Length: 210
Length: 210
DNA sequence: CGCTTATGGATACTGATACTATCCATCACA
DNA sequence: TGTGATGGATAGTATCAGTATCCATAAGCG
Image 1 (cartoon, chains in turn yellow, brown, red, orange):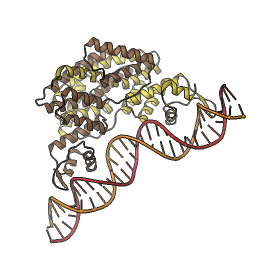
Image 2: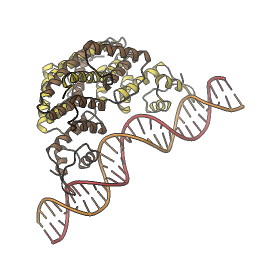
Image 3: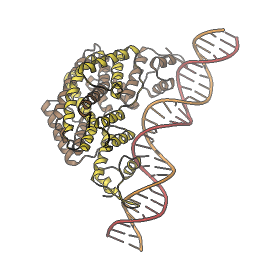
Image 4: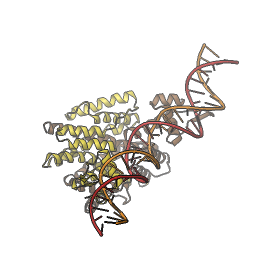
């Protein structure tokens, strides 16, 4: 398959494919001569994955690169790989919540984790994000949402459990790792859009007239 | 409160505040003379909200503007407002899934909605995103994840229901609308980070050694 | 009163990101 | 044999989210 065909197969413009090659998102094709390379099925798959991450999940190119690199290093333990993907997916932010809201958020989240018996690395990037989010919600006066953190955690635990099960069903380790990454990233998009739909439906029922 | 104090109170640099004023994210302060304005508590709140949307939820500035405009138009019915926020939050994308995956995804999602009795506008932006996501997951060979769409929907329905309840508790319509927007956007961040934490915990338990 | 600092408003500049465009010396193939 | 595609390199572009600079004026202090 030449680059033009790859482009046709995936609907990605040739210059964009070249760009991804340059950036190291997509492995180079097999060179048969200095200006002739051939691409295979893995390239089609990989390219589709790249586009899904970028367009659907809005992951920045640099982050996609990191994620794919971790995917391609099969020496790394799976749990490490997940950690790497999580880190890549969690932006660093510096936020303005009031100090007491932040303190309250920290204890609330710590308690939640303890209550559920979750084993969380204190350095986990998602931990900081969660605390920040709770703190901001409090600062913005949304205490009644935050009060039900537990309900959220219940629901989340539910689908996370089966996600891991579904993903574990993969026979080879490589497939497993890929599934984990895809599941982590696109799963979020899936959940988010389901949630918006559910909201729309419920809001339609409840607020037709307000 | 002058702009410098507003800056100190929210930890947002003065030039950035000026930028938000220019862009119409933040209403102008009350002018006492041609170059002297005073800002109040609403500005502090609004600015915090803006930063939360931008930094935590990664919402682009232009989208924040749209959302806030809809928030400030109290003539608009609540359901319309939510639709507007959803539209602003859903990026338009053009994706490469295989045609049969896309067809399968469309029927699956349509069935899901019918089964649950959800009332969804066929134009709902989240609908297209959901179909795309399912289609891409299928194309990428993640059928076992997609097979449990229903499980996801269950969990999502669970917290959406109580979110709407929590938010409905707001006394005034303005507060309600604000809560809805904050809940919609920051709720997603909350759920996403909870999910990452749950994943980390389960993955730690299961794959310590792989 | 005078002097330093801050302010509102306007305009210009910057750095990052994600591509596009152009060029060129091959190469495939009709 | 010539027309179009290709790999590789380099340069250009559009958008985004701020920063920086300037200016005339105003506030706060000593």
